[in-house]
Amino acid sequence: MDITHGMGEVTNLYVTIQNTGQVNLANVCATLNGQDEGRPHPDKTKCVASLPAGYQVGEKLTIDTTLGKPSPVQVDVTSEGNLLQRLGQKACAGFGLFSPNTDDLGTITPIP
Image (cartoon, rainbow, N blue to C red; front, top):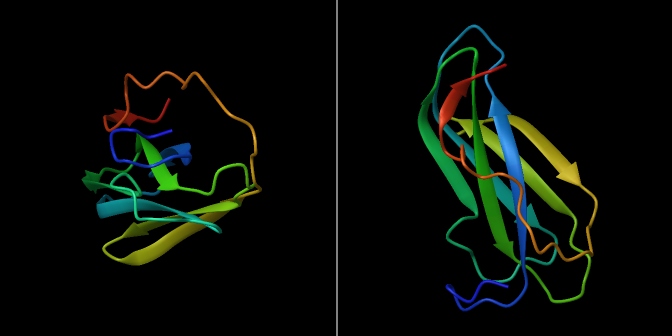
């Protein structure tokens, strides 16, 4: 539930974007899409201005979904508008009351 934005059921997805290449990336964005997505959620897309080679960033993405219906999701990761990776996940119909550790969300850190 997302009362702050006036939405009922929402789907949250926690992603870690890693730059395992040798080149620094600019304007790196992750966008969550759902099969039954409702209104656009403000946290549907998260971006970082720069992601250096050998570093990672964790983000929480959120979409508005239909109550009680399974919603397959997909994340697109782009840099400078170019698609780098697209990953999908089967629907999850379960409700989670506790989120994972979110202390480092949005913080760029070295890949362990």
